[in-house]
Length: 85
Image 1: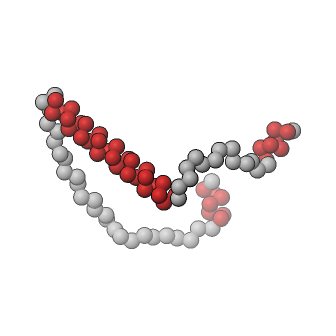
Image 2: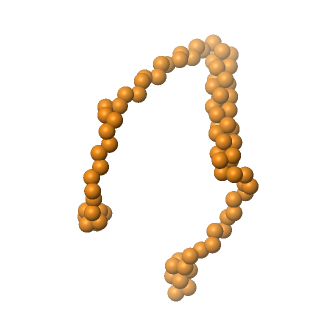
Image 3: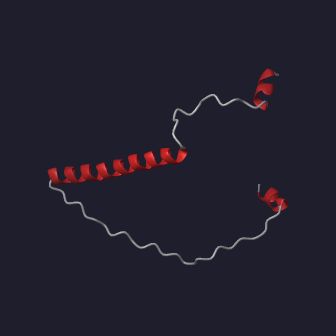
């Protein structure tokens, strides 16, 4: 019985955020960190390729083309959602 009561009652958050920065500043810090990780990985792969006499070919990225710029939506009722679920 207590297990059911515990599962139904709201719980307090057990973990608190460790950071004290503003969310935007924190997001920018993560962005800079992961950008540097990518740059360093690219530099390391270039160095490794040069050490092993391998030439890395730069592949051209294909352009992104969209077939349409339109977005279509339609009204959906709860009955339709219930039927799908």
